[in-house]
Amino acid sequence: MFRTGPRNLISDVAGLRVGNASDARLKSGVTTVLCDEPAVAGVQILGGAPGTRETDLLEPHNSVEAVHALVLSGGSAFGLDAASGVQAALRERGIGLEVGGFRVPIVPAAILFDLRNGGDKGWGRYPPYRDLGYESVEAAAVDFQLGTAGAGTGALTSGLKGGLGSASTLLDSGVTIGALAAVNPTGSVTVGRSRHFWAAPFEIGDEFGGLGYPSPMPDDAKCILLKYRDKQIGQQVETGGNTTIAIIATDAVLTKAAAKRLAISAHDGFVRAIWPTHTPADGDLVFALATGKSGIELTADAAVDLYAAAGATMARAISRGVFAATPADNDLFPVWSSRR
Image (cartoon, rainbow, N blue to C red):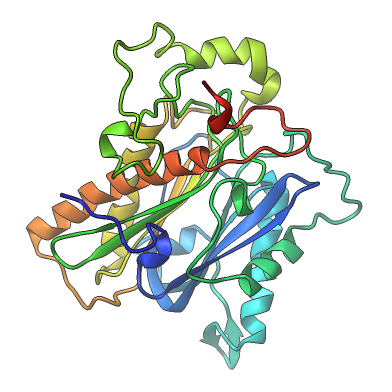
C-alpha cells in the first residue's frame, strides 16, 4: 500500500526545495524547484501547444547530464523570462555548470497560458516574470503553499479554478517519489459538475476530500468540456490557451534515459486526473528529476513500482492543486470548495 511522505509534497524527495512567487493583481506567478546538488533530469511533452526553454538538452543523447533548477511559470511565452531570473539568483550564489571559467546555471523551464484570466496584464515594456523568477529562488524551502500560489496563481480548468498541487509517495524499496503540477488544463479534474475527482481511486486518505466516485455516475460525466465551453470558457479553449505543466522527482539513482522514462510514466497521472488531456489546445509537459540521494539503484521489479507510482502520485498532485485553490478578486471561475 502506498504511503505519503511526511509533508506529502515533492520536497519529501531529499535534495529538493520549492519556491513560489506570485502577483495577485497580475493573477500569475512562478514556481521553481531548486536542486541542492545538480540532478539528473528528463522531459516528455505530449500536449499540442508547449512553451519551453532548454528542453532539448534533457534528451538522453545530449551531453549535459544534470540541472540546477526547473521552472514552471504562468504568462504564456512571456513567462519564459522567469528562468533568466532564476539563473541570475543562482549565478550570484556561484551555482552553475563550469564552462571555460564561467558558471552557467542550467535551468530548463515550461510555461502555461494564464493571460486571459481576469488579471491585469498591463505590465508596460517588460513583463515581470524575470523578477518573479528571482523571487522564487529567494523563497525556496521544503514547505510551500499549494493552490492559488506560484505558477498556479491564475490557473483555470474546465469550470473551476486550477492551482499548484503536490504529492509524495514512499515505496517499499525505500525510494521516495514526489510530484508537482501547475494545473491549467482544457479538461476537467472533476466528474461532471460534481465535487468528485477523476483521480479518486489513487487518493491517500482524504487529501482531496475523500469523496471517492459518485454513484451513479452523473449524466454530464463525459460531456463536461462541451457544456462549459459554451457557457463559461468561451474563447479560453483554443490552441495554446491551456496547459498542465509538472515535475516528477525521485531520490533513486537514475540515468538520463531512465529519467525520461519516469517523465513518460508520470503522464499517466494526467490521464487519470484530467478528462480530456493531451489535446491540441494543451501544452502538457512533465519534467523528471533524480537526485540520487537515497543511493538506491532499482531492480527491474522496483523500477516497475517506481513508474507505476509516478502516475498515481502525479494524479494526486493534480487533484490537490484544484482542491486547494482559493478565491480572489476578479476570478472568472469558482473554486472547488464552493461547489455543492
